[in-house]
Image (cartoon, rainbow over the protein chains, first blue to last red):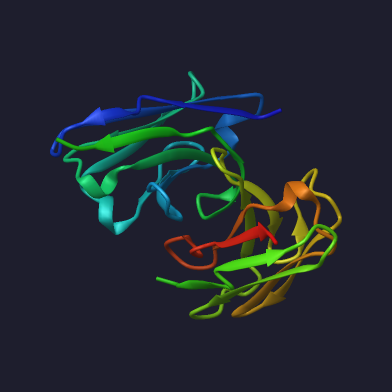
Length: 120
Length: 107
């Protein structure tokens, strides 16, 4: 069974930084694009960022462009999301999700999520 | 950006009844539409992809239909574990977007 495990969330002040990790196992990691999808408390789902299987192409929603950077280390089966200049509106549970076909989705496997809280 | 509008926002039904959930796109997404189920405290789970294909392990009572701008998720006979929030998601246009969700609650 595919496993995706996020870590790195926590409480950070506005303007601060965090790096999230998504450790993957039990599938051919480098063959799949991985996306980050977030969910603000009590709200719906929002696609945030994605990275191709080889790591050569990255994608961002406009609201995080220039602040977030996605990367991956295929030798460690891990995807990262570096989040800088964090804002209150970035507060959410962040899920990593495996794209069945691409970073566009559909997302056939998800991690359990990691909570990021941006507050002073 | 394609906006997906789900209706109703809340659907109150009893176990054994048939559920019909709608997702309407602001422009055509062809058949590149997926449905997810999310229970409290859990990650979303893929139910249907490309409008009508059940994901691995999804029971046959779940079915999807539609193309272009109008899509339907049908649950033929509700089981107690089906009460949850359901989201649609399109992958036809950049960026991928989700609907706002339909909460399926027990009547």
